[in-house]
Length: 123
Image (cartoon, rainbow, N blue to C red; front, top):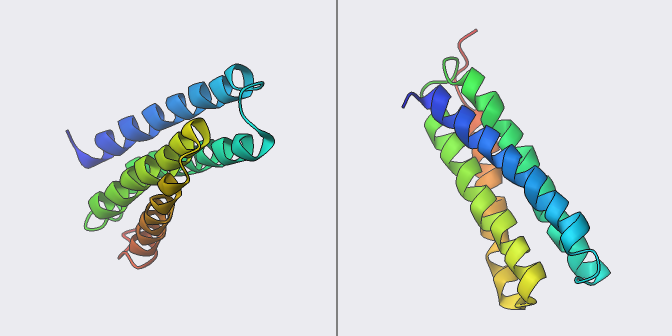
């Protein structure tokens, strides 16, 4: 699968899941989670959506930053798994030690954006 197609599918799938997970959180967990844990869950959904949109954008930029698209996309995708995934798990289980994983996902998001910031761009 070509890079652009991969990032497009990951981005669209990530957005699909962020809407579904967000709806589950808003409706299915409304009376289950504390306000603090709802906010944690919502942060996971929000960052998943942001970086799924970044993957969609990367699908269209892949031809313009071909040398960096794979690395940036991998950072965004792994960041979603670690950052959002750890926040979902933390909010649902209350296991605070899962919060130690969240910053690793955040660092991957920063790395992805840094890779794009420094990429040679072909207009």
